[in-house]
Length: 177
Image 1 (cartoon, rainbow, N blue to C red):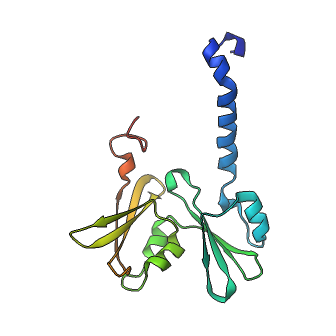
Image 2: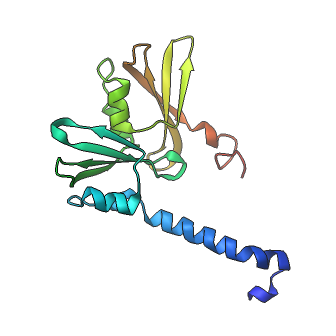
Image 3: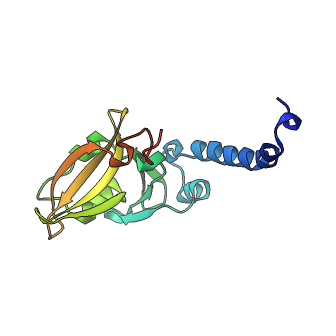
C-alpha cells in the first residue's frame, strides 16, 4: 500500500510512527548485555549513557546499574576495576541472584548493590516489614515479582515471589489485552 492510498489522518501520522519505531528498535539494540570485559568506562558511558546508580566496591572498583529491561524485568550490573575497565556484566533480575541473598546478614545497602533499584517499595504494617518489589521473568516465561523484605533496622529477612500485579487481569501492565 502506498502512502497516497492512506487516509489523510494516517498519512500525517506516518512520519511520527516511523520515528517512534526507529527509536524503539535502536533502544532494543542498545542493551547493556553487549558490554564486554575490557571496555573502558568512557566507552560504556558514551554508548549507554549515565547509569541509574553507582556503587563503590572493594579495592577501588565500582559497579554501575543499567535498569533498561522491558517493564523493569531486566537490570544489568557492570563492574569496573580501579583503572576503569569492565571486569564483568551481569543481568541480576533472576532466581539465581535472588537466591544469593542471606537472611539476617544482607542489608538494604547490600541488596541494592546486588539487585539494583526496586520498582516499588511497600510497607506491611502487620509484620512491620518493608518490601522492595523486583519484577523479573521467572523461568524466562512468567511475569513475576520478587518481594525482598527488610525489618525496621534495614536487615534482610526473607523474600516472596508471585505474579507481577501489573499483569493480573490482562496481558499487559495496564490490564488491557
